[in-house]
Image 1 (tube, rainbow, N blue to C red):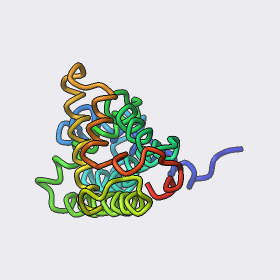
Image 2: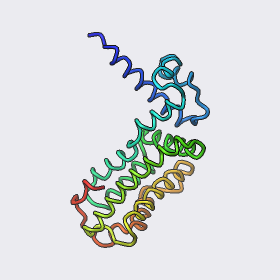
Image 3: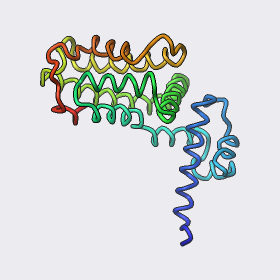
Length: 212
């Protein structure tokens, strides 16, 4: 059955966003032109302008599409592991030391977007909103873990959330530049140490898996 016009438009939009995500991650946002994105998607530059109005519109649409992607990756790792320690190890392995190609590309794209945000107020506002959402989600998770005795109350939950995110990003950057400098065990132990995981209880179960 032939596709409808709306289906064709949706397919073109998805192709353009996927191409832009890959190119922005690999080459940097400023190094990629509208024509390059269109060519990679198998479309014309006119399609980019028709769907997004400009390169800036394409970038902002990409921000909307990927708003929760990294958060979703981390959440999935927590859901698959039974204990707090296992969850931290899953994050260490699958986000820092051995990420999938998709996760690696996402992390590169995140860096490019943050860099762009330092020079572009419109992008910065969107990134701040994303950051607040991720921070609030992690804060609620750490609060629940503390209440359940799974994490030691060494700092307020919002502080633990800030430290956790900063460490994951920092470790991933270090491992990307110097893979021999870190392994999964070292990263997992460091995350556990600075967040107080396991200090109150070594029998953590899935009690709070839906929170973090």
